[in-house]
Image 1 (cartoon, one colour):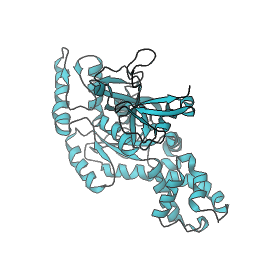
Image 2 (tube, one colour):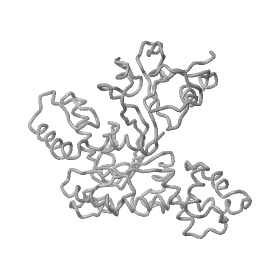
Image 3 (spheres, rainbow, N blue to C red):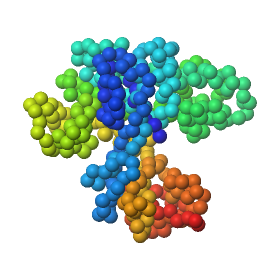
Length: 395
């Protein structure tokens, strides 16, 4: 899976991306500091299975702190968008097409309203952040509309006795659609029995908008929450957009805490509401950390960055963590304890998990064992979050 970070220029998007990945990206106070999409690895955190067995894990990928397992996910940071991006303004079409590979989006906004529509710095409170939410959703909807228009001549010429959702699904798999998704959208819009050739422009746009919401689900990262007016703006956004997932955050604070932890000045577990000072700090460093503690962690209990990553994977995309392990031995052939943690979709079976590990394991599946309960289960057994599963094969 790939998570795309998107938004207007100069809202702290690259800072957010680096706070997630600690990648070496350019952070600058001008539009288009990012031109090509950056790729990186972020981390979601879950309770590690080592706590259940009272052992210490040895992750091959990611890391674990005090039985909190950080599992890697792929991320891309796409250059800032400007109004008219879907028409090609500001390299918009190139930027939008970079997002085609993303399974979900994090839209970073300047909730303090200190960046105008062109991505230029202005005084806090000058810009209404609601306009940025509307702007980006509008750009994405028209982007999807343009994709549909290119297919429409072909779609309308197909045999009319084929159900609409099947016709559409044949053509829209490239944007992540499925037959069930298109069927649900058609039903919601009362279009399941209307011939495609009879759709008007309004119906086509409505379908494009719903398709975008289903195939590119999104969380709003309300960044710069530490600026005084931001809290008031955030509360207003919650009332104005009750159906959207809007989470307050300070990417700059998260990045500062991670950098301080990296240099062993503090102990900090991403997503927590506190940190422990370890090294000798100068006055500027002390003041900076005190500001973060007082204005962000004490008020919001987190910088918001880790919550956004967790929510988009576990609540929006609905993945669950599953650990491979043996009933009699939790170590791999190299002696590493619980070295792996896989993310699977809710509703995945023991057989799905076997194929996730390796095709040969899936092909030769006999049964599975729920290591926590020591119970033997079949291939259709539905997995639960945090399960530790041993796969038995005929090889």
